[in-house]
Image (cartoon, rainbow, N blue to C red; front, side):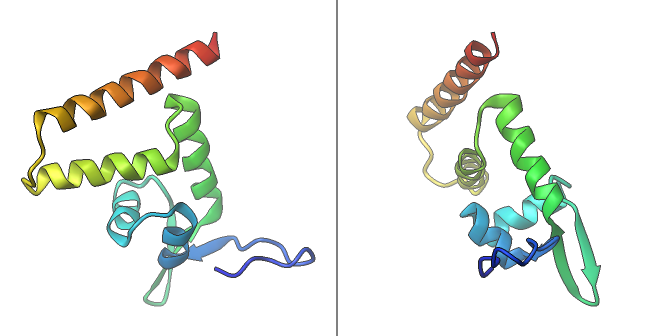
Length: 113
């Protein structure tokens, strides 16, 4: 997705590829977001476009609710995908992700007080 010129309004909808570049995620994660309806899409012919306002809403909700960023979410989804595929995930890996999430929740709680 090329950057907008100052006189040009930002796009209202972007491609899946542009979403992947914007959030630094892979296509699988992008389509998972679509399937879970975390972002809204439209079809124009056979082309699926993601509505930018839904991407902004998703990012704001992700950061407000848990303090976890979209990059964190992508990392967690990657971790869970490996676990689903029965990759060599150790108990230390599981403890690490649980500690990470607990720390993020505590930080979010501290900031809201």
